Length: 211
Image 1 (cartoon, rainbow, N blue to C red):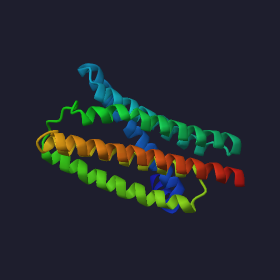
Image 2: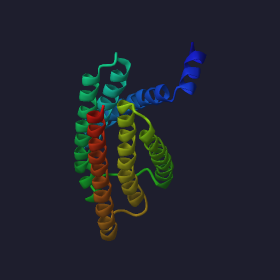
Image 3: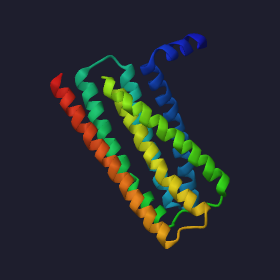
Image 4: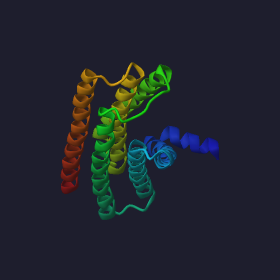
């Protein structure tokens, strides 16, 4: 049974992508719960905001995974796809609050440089894989899968914002110059995400009209 499942995942790229999307959703739930508990115990707006972010990420990923398992219904699937764009927009806007907290040095970090370097390595891997998979969206007509790939790009870009702040704090703290740099790069990343969402929404709308 396990070997058969592995063989199916190896031979079917779409099934593999949705399987990893499901695993990613479970990780989102765990991370949301962790930050939610910290947010309550420490009265931390930062952890509370991150909890909301991962809960929204969980909702949209599970929505797309479940819809892919259901019997095909074009109208329902289109509604799910466009609703997922709305949730992605909410996710992006929801990250403005924690981003402002990061810029204003309202986040505590005392784990040292080694965890920060590990985070940098993982973030680099996430961005690389997200970009590679996102480039495949051009040749794939599965709108649900393409939206999952867009979500992964957004999550990877958001992780850059957190990583940047972590490295700054691990290397001496948020000085004025670093604060300006952090504000500019954070604005650029969030603006880039909004541009990606708008472009992909337009492409999706045109594709539906052409069908």
